[in-house]
Amino acid sequence: MITLTSLSLVALFIPTFFFVSVTPGMCMMLSMTMGMSIGLKRTFWMMWGELLGVAIVAIASVVGIATVMLEYPSVFNLLKYIGGAYLIYLGIQLWRSKGKMSFNLINEAQNTDRLNLAMQGFITAIANPKGWAFFISLLPPFISPDMPLVPQLVILLSIILMIEFLCLILYASGGKTLSKLLQKSGNVRLLNRISGSLMMGVGIWLAFG
Image (cartoon, rainbow, N blue to C red):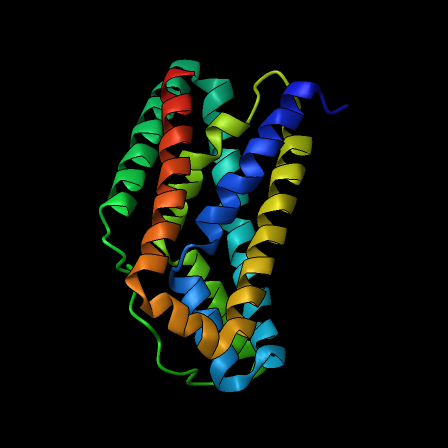
């Protein structure tokens, strides 16, 4: 049964992950450029691959964290401090970004075969070291050692995939309009600072809560 505490954690996790997911990055820019070049319908194939990759990264991160939490509680506490410090660092970097986007824009989709589109999305999600580091840092504060792991994993993974999918669709369907908005440093700066503030807040809570 979902307790009041777990509901409050979920309520905090949703906006935190949304702003992190919607912030321009490799996967979102890939979705936008494919949406502009090959259309939203075909871009869905890339999205399925990307979501599968994100799910694998998230599950591996949670399982790894849970193993450390159960077998080595002292190491888990250390991991929480390191994760909190890393999130605070990322938040500060976003605040200092001056509206610049930390990615290289992909000019076009080179291969529109369905399998290749899915593989491109999958590899982009799996091969991104920042994605691994982020999940390992973000997820610990939202995992309770007093509750079964599997239900918590199902809830968090469902939220992650739904939000990620919505953001991918937003970028793919936004096309040229969204591209023009992102070219204005003020818009990117605001988005970065909202995400950075949430990261720093969760990082402080993780390290000292």
